[in-house]
Length: 180
Length: 167
Image 1 (cartoon, one colour):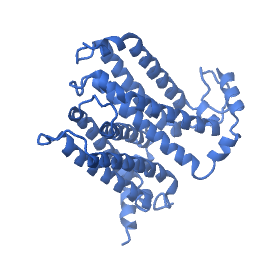
Image 2: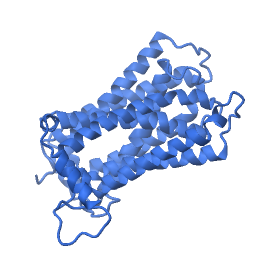
Image 3: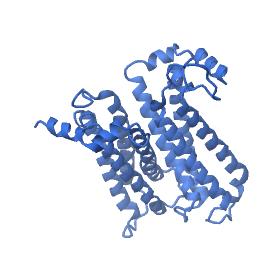
């Protein structure tokens, strides 16, 4: 994994035209603002849907509540786009950052968890005669989803406090958390 | 009015020095994280309500969205408290920056809009469930204010003139 991380940082380089634009005074703060707006859309849509599965607003049909999800996906897309801009500009600050590793881990959990929902619970929850109370499995998935996205926010917000410094000595951990 | 002596006193308090100086991840980094999570729920749910008014998820009974209001307000109060702690940590940084007052104003307007929207769609006496153009305008204004508040908040890290009384 160390070699892969080093290869990633070297390949991205941070000297592309995009990186040059990102280094202008307004680009980075603007991209960050969009990243926070995307976060709010994601939590507002996906988080609210999770809360509905858990029983908040139980008189709202679950299928009706699901119509908010495309806006959560829009927020997620905004954040993938703006997040990529940050990585393309300062690859070493993310690829070697343990907080970023945790952020990716929680994103993966959130993604697999959502896939599990659509594979196992979608039909039952969305059937025309589905009860207003979600089945237990869907509630567990919703709780995991909320925790995963809160974990993603935490990993993102703590990035700046775990900036990688230069490596000293032999690195034995699974992932590099310092700049070689 | 010179508020520097007050800012210097605030920065000398134990609480301020803990927020800024403690090596614990529960101090400044933890407070900042709670501030982002609270924002996600407060702004996110408010935006979902606005979007519903503007025609998204039309089969969601508008009045039933009131069940989400306690979580929105929990997010708001989490941010009021975490924001106050961040302010106590860096009072000079915030209070000498006009952008900070812009952020507070935008939040105040957004919350006022939320209360007005809530009165129109959630109150028991609110028999009118039709979405009027006035209600739509309130929802659009709410979304604009939140976007502005978030942008202003993010810019605080880039626009401050003085970090502390010493710097």
